[in-house]
Image 1 (cartoon, rainbow, N blue to C red):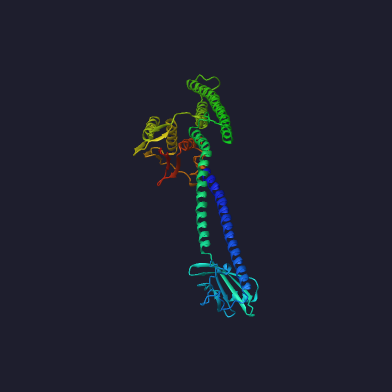
Image 2: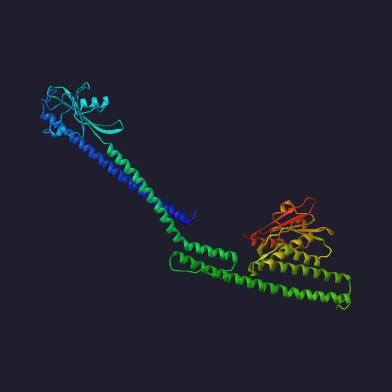
Length: 467
């Protein structure tokens, strides 16, 4: 998950918590306020009705204040009992109606009714009738005749509930809009904050691709990101200086190693020629043993010189600044095979070129890697057998008919200085295939070794094509 997305999610989550908390607080506040107003209204109406009843202690079914049909009349002089914003019924102990406002017929539960018969307090309840919601009160009082009468008073609160539902819907939409806008704003803000980091990452990737540590990152403004860029430039400077020192060390070591070897070789060759002509100082100068020893010493010098060359090549490879170019693997391989045939006329090499695809790389490095694989195949192949080289798209495959490689050694033949116990008697340093692996890896490719059916080894070099 990217940093900008994490920031956007974090801001969206904070906004969601704040918006939901505010919406819940607003909703609960309005709900409590409406509930308190309804309770106060009903309690006020109950008090007014009971006061009216107390004043009209002689209230009976024949009282002129009541209608003939049993409903409360609307005497303008008795405003308290005549307010039809509530439904009122007077009930006997058996549940029958003594008097009521027009069409007042709200139901009640027997439990609430019995509780009201025994209590002096108002018994609240809520009920739904024909999709309308009512808040009711049941209050018991004693009539002058001694009979227990129940006052049922109810108010239609459907509009309040609908108002709460609309408020809940609008608060939900508002909270969603706040969360969405906060997340969007957070993403935009995070993009602005992360933009310098993106530039820093791009610069580091470019340096990693080019291996040019002399490049620096442009530092603009101040702050933590600018400090990181400045520290990164400082690290690049130190790394570049360290690599320059290593390069100089490799060059100096190469010179110091090759000079005495060249001198030693020249001396041995001169001694060998003099011995062959019989002019070597000392006793028995022309003895074959002496000449054989010189030949052996010369061979050891050649092997040591080869080892130094391979070591220098492997050590100096990371510092090579050869330009990367678009290459045809078939052309590069054909040039290497031609050179190999000139140096090894007794070794047949069959070259097959398929449908090649261009790759990006350093020509000298790839040519040296292919040459190393061919030299390795020539070293281990039986005399007279041919080496098969094929190029297919972005792969180079070299097949030989040598003894093959032990299964346990297949994954290690590309390690530096590794030599299988079965080839310890054959000249070599164990660095040729290691150099191949280094070169192919620097091109983003892979190397693979496998045994062939019927004997021999297959070395496959695969280099990715440019996107």
